[in-house]
Length: 307
Image (tube, rainbow, N blue to C red; front, side, top):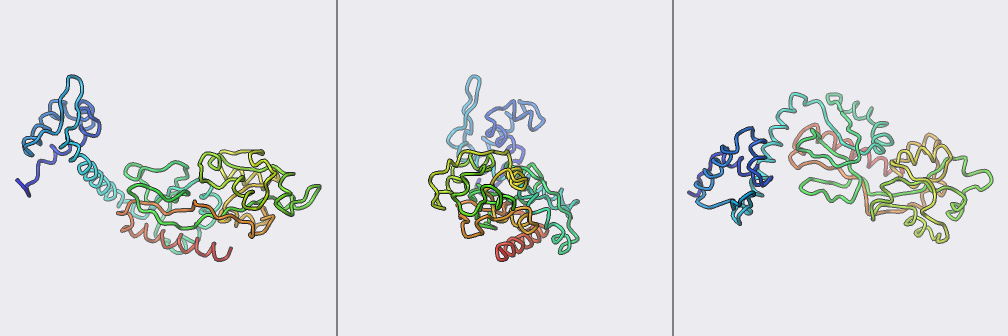
């Protein structure tokens, strides 16, 4: 028996049924009858000479043997599906789909895309701007640029840029009735923040920055909050307060004179988060992914060096 391989249809029926613990749902997914699914499972059990499911009155459950087999089947069919989807995308081989947060897309990626096209004119980027994690098996995404701690299960991830956060504001706030000259001057101004800075325990926040700057008598929770970091930065540009953001995201607005680092860069704060290049291991063998990885690594390296 060792070395022989059971029928593929029987394995597919087992994987679908084990994943959903329902013969009826497996039949709907595979577009066959429940009786056909049951027969395929019996074929596999006969082939392996072991029971894979416990049949109950109105439910089924995996046996110990079924529990042992299922992870291998789930991973195997996931790899097959990924390979087929990748092959189908070859007809659009010049299109590279990049998933990225809206703020990083607007403030960093889009202003630099011209340089990517100059270096790789044979490729066309489709930017999918979203905050949520993507499903590489189903969403047609080639690469994701994610801000976080780098823990992405079963995916390749590489740090592109460690996070450094720094306050930014309109140049107008350096003058007037309460000019910003030292961190303690922030008590006279609104502290602008985005939702994610208050929803994730390790995310850089005003409380963290103020403590590092030695300021203890300012309420870090006061001020305006926005659904995205881009909105917080725009509010800062409009002179509505001071935002805490990544130096990488702020650099172009600072160069254009829309924002300033009121305390220079000496009061920046390194945090545990950063920007990561994320994709399935298999995508690293695709030429357009390799090209994009080389380009963005060089761009971020140049940004960090020039900063």
